[in-house]
Figure 1 (cartoon, helix red, strand yellow):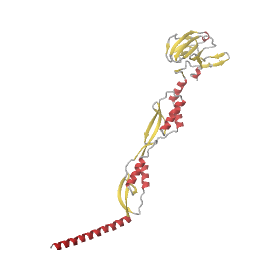
Figure 2: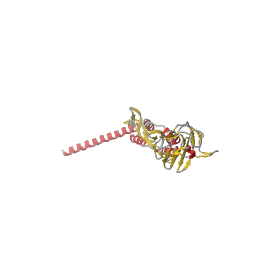
Figure 3: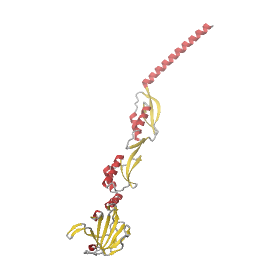
Figure 4: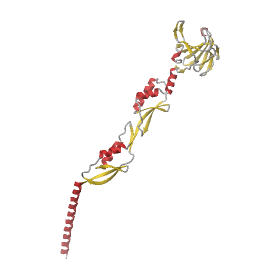
Length: 318
C-alpha cells in the first residue's frame, strides 16, 4: 500500500514540476516578446494635460530639483505652480520619450522670484539695480560726490518680487538719485554752510559790488542794493557782539554765530537789536540805509571766520 502511495506522489510531483517548468518557460517567452515589442515608460501630465513620456521618473525629478536650486544674486528662488503627475505604462518599443521637452515646458511655467536692490532716500525708492555690489557703488559715489559730511538718509533695500523689475546701470542710478529734490536741497544747504553754520540771505536785492579788488580798494564784503528801510534779517542764529556806529561802516551790527563765524551788517538806517542780545533764525535786526561811507541805500554784508574775511558768495547769493 505504501509503495503505491509513494509511486503516486512521485508521479504527481513530476507532473507538477513539468507544468511549473512549462509555465515559467511560457512566461519567459511572453516577457521576451513584451520586452522586444513594448517598453515601460511614465506618462507625464502637467496641469491636467499630457506633455510627454519619460523612461525614468527619478531622473526627471532630479532635473527639476536641480533647476529649482539654480538661485543666485539675481534669483531668490524658483517654485513650480504644480507638481507633474506620472502614470506607469507599457508602450510600443518604437515610441520615443521626450525628457528635454518636458523639462523645458515645466521650466516655462515655473515661478521665478527675483532679487533686486533699491536705493532709497528718506524711505522713498529712487533707483533699482541688479546686485548689492552695484547698489553700494551707487551710494558710495553719491556720498563721495556730495561729501561724506552731507547727511543723507540713503539706504539699500533688498526687493524680492516675482516680477522681473526693470533695473538701471550704476551711472543712471547715480544720476537719478543726484537729481532728487531732497539731495539738491541738502547740497544747497551744505554750500551755504561755513564751519557748520548755515547762512540764509538777509535781504533780497541787486548786488552792486562784489567781494575783492576794485578801484577804490579791496572790498571786504558784498553790497546788496535795496530801498531804505528794507528789513534786514540775521543770516543765522547767534549773539549780537556789536550794535552802533563804526566809522566807514556807519550804523553796524555784528553777530557771532559760534564756531568762529561772524556776520557784519553795515550802512544801516536803523538798528533793532543791542549788544549781548540773542537773535533767532530769520529775525529782523536792522533796516537798509546809507550811513557811513556809502553812495546809496544798500546792505554791506561781511562774513568772517576766526577773524579772517571770507567772500559771502562762497555761501550765499550764488
